[in-house]
Every structure is written in C-alpha cells, then in structure tokens.
Amino acid sequence: MTIRELETTWAPRMLSVLRIVAALIFFAHGTEKLLGFPVADRVPDAFTLGWFAGVLELFGGGLLVIGLFTRPVAFLLSGQMAVAYFIAHLPQSFFPSLNGGDAAILFCFVFLYLVFAGPGPWSVDAVRAKRSGADM
Image (cartoon, rainbow, N blue to C red; front, side, top):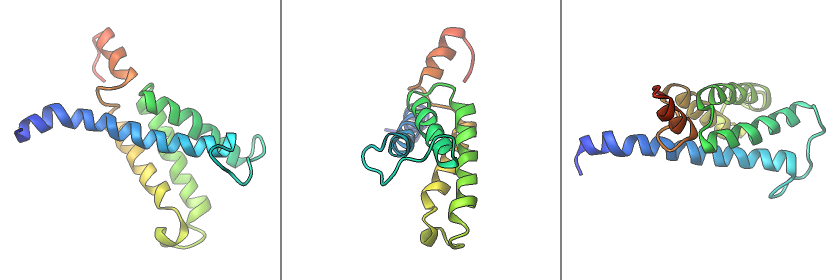
C-alpha cells in the first residue's frame, strides 16, 4: 500500500472511525448522567447544569455516532467541553492530569477538528450530500 492509497482511501475512513469512537465514548457520558447507566452515584436534577450537559452528551453524541448534522453538533459540543473544562476542572488545578480535565480537552479539540474536517464517508451527512450532489 502506498502513501497515496493511505491518503485517498484510508484517511477519510479513519476520520469516520475517529468520529464514531469519540462520539460513542461521549454518548456513554450522557447515558451515565441522565440514565444512570452503566453506573452513576446520582442523576442530576432536571434543568441543572449537569442535566443540560447530559442532554448534550446523550443527543449530541448520538447524532455524531451516526454522522448527522456533524459540523454544527461538533461545534456545539466543542464549546460545551471548553466551558466544562473552565468551570469544573481548571479551578481544581492548572494541570489537566491533576484536575481530571484531560478528557474534556481531548473532546474539545476532536470535536473542533470535526467542524473543519467533516464527518467522513461513513455518515448520514455523506449519504445526504451524495443524494443532493453537494460537497460535505
């Protein structure tokens, strides 16, 4: 396999894999917050900051898993993770390895990347674009 084949064939596919895996992990945070699954000490009260975060994680993560409305959803979730880092993690310590915010930083920048890179070929957005003849 040549570098050219990797770039043209596998790079777009791996973009889809990155989106799906990151979204599944993010989705799991939402199921834990809102549904108490797989396990949670407590589910946040409705309409609190934690509840809104869970809603975004559950529904935004679900949309990203299937690759629907990828760019706007990824933009929203990237912002959510930036806010989460500054509100919940940074006050505990400057260092992400000490304040537990490393996942929030990674999600923030992976989602920001998806805003610019798009969903990849394995997505509902790609199917919709192909049907309409538009670029992603």
